[in-house]
Length: 425
Ligand SMILES: [Zn+2]
Ligand SMILES: [Zn+2]
Image (cartoon, rainbow, N blue to C red):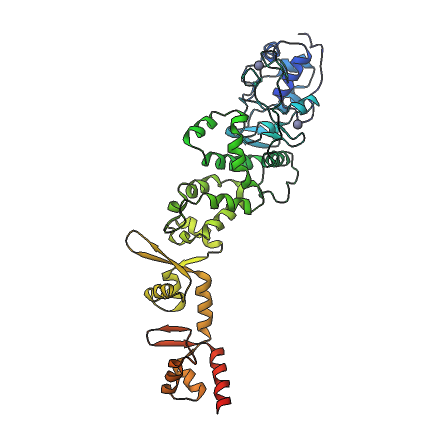
C-alpha cells in the first residue's frame, strides 16, 4: 500500500474525525469517505472502535497515536465515549451534527469540546459554531473538507455576536475539558460531562415534549440557541443564578402543601439528574434551596428529608414547635394566628397545616427560658398578686407570652418596672 502524498501528524487536541477530514482535503480527495475507504474503515468510525492499521500506514503515523485521538466508547463503559482524559455520556455529545468555529479552523485549530451538548459559540472569536451549510445539509464528518460541504460550497459563518451567556458557557466547557480553573462565579461543577448534563436537564425542562423529542434527535445549533440561552444562567453567578432559575419555576406561590405541587416534576426529576459525582456541590445547594421552602416540612421521603434537614431549614411543623416550646400543637396554631409566632397557614387535604418560622420558635424559646412567671414577678417586685393584676390592667406591664392562665414576663420589663416603683416610693 502506498502512502498518501501529503502527510502530517495530528494537531494539538485534534480528534480522529477532524484529522481525517483535514488529511483527505490536503490530499485532494473528493470526500473524506474516500480516505475511509482507502483505510478500510467503517462509516461509523467516530463512535465505534475499529482497525486503524491501514490508516496508520497511509499517513505514516503510529497506530497508537491514531487510537489516542479516537472518540470511541471507553473500555468497560460502552455507554460513554472517550473524551480527553474523562469519559463522556454518548447522549451528551452530538457527533451526528458536528460543529465547528470557522475562524478556528481557518487558523488551523479544532477543539474536541465543540460537540458537547449546549456548546454553541467560540469564546476566542466571539462567533457562533456552525453545523450546517447554506444548502441546508448538516456538516457531517463526510464532507469535502473541514470548511467545505458535500455540495462544494464553503461553510459560512453565522453573522452576529453570540449572547454573552452562550460565550461564557462555552468558555466553561472549554476550561473544564482542558483542566483549567473555571471563572470565579461559575457553578462548582467537576468535569465537562456534569456541566453538560445539568445544562441539558434545564434546557429540556422548560420545553414542550416536542422540543425534547427533537433534542434527543439532536437539533441544529441554530435551533438550540434559545433553549440553551435560557438554561445557561444556572451555571453563572453562583449560587444566585441557580436560585433565580429555581424561583422562576415555582408554579404557585401560596397555599401549596408539597414541593411536588409547588414545583411540579422539577423537584423529583432534578434529584435524579443531580445524582452525579461532578454535581455534588450543586446538589447540596439545591437541597438547601428546597429545604428552605415552606413546603419542605411536609416531605414524606425520608432520604430527602434527611438531606434537607442537613441544610438550614427555615420552617417547621406545629408539632416540632409545640415540643420545643413545651405547649400543645393547638397552642402553637393559636400563636401563629395571633402573630405571636411567625408562620403561615396552609390548607391541606383534610386539615389545616401551620408552617412556623423556625427562627421565631427559637427566639421565643430562648426568651421563655429566662422569663418570670406571674407569682415570681409579684414576689420580686414585693407587691401582692392583686396589685400586679391591676398594673397589668393599666398596661404598666404586659407579659410577652400568655397561654391559658399562664403568663410569662420578660426580665428586662420587670427590672424597668422595679426601677419605676422605687422612684414613686
Ligand atoms: Zn474560534
Ligand atoms: Zn452544502
